[in-house]
Image (cartoon, rainbow, N blue to C red; front, side, top):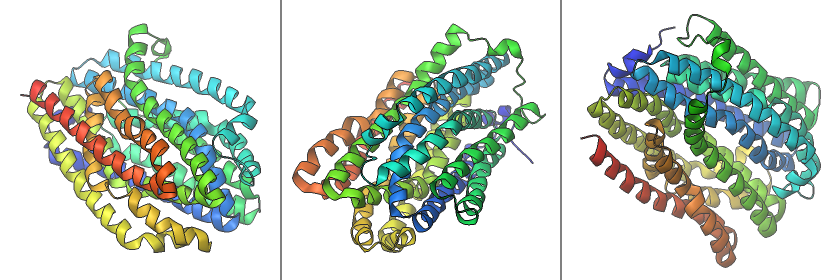
Length: 446
């Protein structure tokens, strides 16, 4: 399998690099998103539409804890990319060892707390009425596997920082294929219902982690750490924390928006409102895979070349990443506008859900063609190690604009106010991020 060495990130043409980094990332995200979609369809058809809402209620808690791994991974990978660009191998190794130690300590601690307060957390995130018993089953089983998922997410970003996107792609595909296979075996074959759905997810995380461990122990990886690298270094911990906090803050805000959305929609439309959002949330994960893939591919290229002081290559990577992602976003927008109703019918045959979800979905996706500017812009500051602007710009979309709109508009426009809040927040945050990105490029890259 031909993969990039880290040094090629500073030599090969940016366009080819971006494609080579982004395509595997996009495929990995696509397969992961298909897994989420098909898993939701199977759960909806084999267990019931309320089960879809139950899984959606659990996601904020499990994803927040797992996002610690992603936060530590992205924060550390920014350091690793710049360290490799500056030919500082020892710092890259120490950073990787510290990432593993911190991920294990934090996720195991939070999972323990999450299991203790299970009966309080599920209702707080909208798991009420008929949703609660199914959500509790799923929550308790999946949470045991969350530390494994966190390590997978952390390791995947490090693999990509090394310039090995194909292996990162495989790491994303393994749990998706494993989860769907186990869905058929455990839910359909053994009739385990919600227990089967939960164990399918947890076992798939273990399969993914096994592959990632194999990669780092094999000759494919440049990062050969020893026990000395696991000892926490204060300066490394501080830098990982500052940069990783950007990703963690974003996921924390996502969890808060899930909490607000599920509770607001339950109040306005009951279980049907929560289920509508659950379907739309799955489509957001799925449909944005090419845009997110470009963003993931862009990070190590920008970080490495910034560390190597190759300013023209950094500028080119920004411009081409936005161009590619915007084109893909336009295609996603057109597809949703045309095929919204057939998409919803694939999830459920519930007439109420089919009647209300397509229109809501179109509003949620209305500003997708321009949102790549916001994603690439905030990612750039994280890639170059500037934690404060990365943090602020990351929060613009959902924290500074979406949540306030969500608290205000439904009071006047009911459920329509919820859906239009997505588009308005996307437009405003894109304008703000575009301004600060342009200013930063003019100041530092010319």
